[in-house]
Figure 1 (cartoon, rainbow, N blue to C red):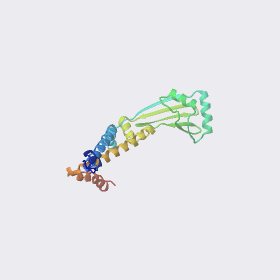
Figure 2 (cartoon, rainbow, N blue to C red):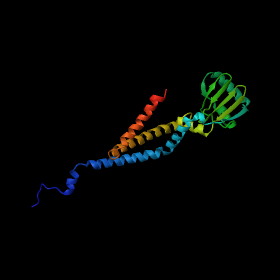
Figure 3 (tube, helix red, strand yellow):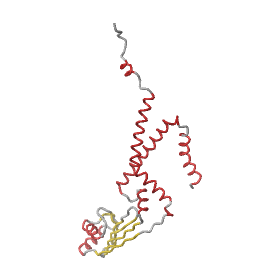
Length: 224
């Protein structure tokens, strides 16, 4: 007769707890997966931010020759009356140009001012148009004289402003936030992978400690 208390090998395997080594292997696989995914997402942006970190640190040594473009035009008489009336009603306000004035400006100058706030006075409407790597502005006077000026400081200045998120708009700002989050995942998963391998790599903790302590010491001793 067969013993009723015996269990098959498959049942014994199912009932046994997961071995610590197997659990460690699962965690390492997950960490490696998140590490390579975050590194892939960060790759291009990390290169960009590393290069611009260098150019920003040496900004005073990198010469830039600004290129300035100026254009002038005369506002048609009907629009001049519209501008004068609107300016008189909105002194010291910050409001976009009326649609007809914005449409004329877009056709006359290489700029899109729709929805951009202008600074209004009794004499004119001044539209600041800051941009990465340069600057621009548009002024339309109640006398009908319109001026547009654009300053371009070169591609290095453009990259530096992209690094800082200066005048880059909401979408690039979101990208910087997402990139920062991906960098955190990359760093944290890298640290945990190092922790798992530290037993077989005696230099792991001294190198990590050096990387943490060095910037702190330099900041305390040499940054005033």
